[in-house]
Amino acid sequence: MRSPLPPAFFARDPVQVAREVLGATLVRTLPGGERLCGRIVETEAYDCPRDPACTAGRFHAARSAEMAIAPGLWLFWSAHGHPLLQVACREAGVSASVLIRALEPQEGLGQMLTHRPVTRERDLTNGPAKLVYALGLDPAQITHTRVDSPALHLLAPAEPLPDAAVQTTARIGIREGRTLPWRFVLRGNPWVSPAAPSMALAEEGPGI
Image 1 (cartoon, rainbow, N blue to C red):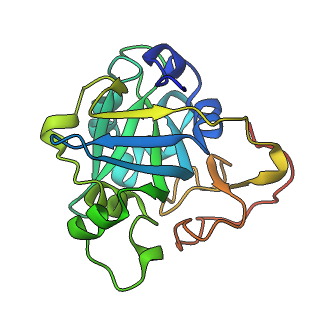
Image 2: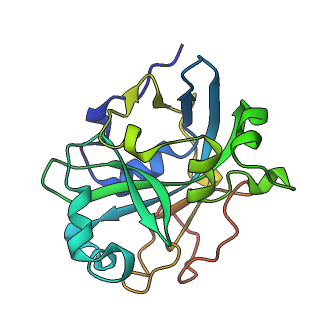
């Protein structure tokens, strides 16, 4: 049986973490005990000490400080009024995180559809705000809780994903830092978000 990833796993470069949590399972346990699970098929890294996106647009300097908490704690970022799920990386006092951008549902699909009714199942969790709503996450309850808590945690992939299974691109919806290859997607997975990267990049190598 796989154990939840501990906070110490996230106390390092978020670009490496974003690549390594691709394929992990995000597990949400409801108060009644029902599990809502999904395979992570898309991630992005934000590393403010070397990231121009942290000083422009939605990742401007004043708000990037919200990420400067201890590693391995959940946090949310608001984009266009919608909450986006992230986990803090590096050491406390340094703004860095990994954004969970898309999930492939595995357990609890019926309950997810109750939280977020959609016509096409593929649209249920194929975006960062969509998955938050589908899992029924309340930012007020989840923010600053440990990433290995029973209510919401991550299970490492059963086996590391080979580079051939991973597509590396620029991130979504940013202007500054738009050439950084810090978005990772499970190649060919239909649950990846439909948004186009800020700038197309060659798909050679893991991009770390």
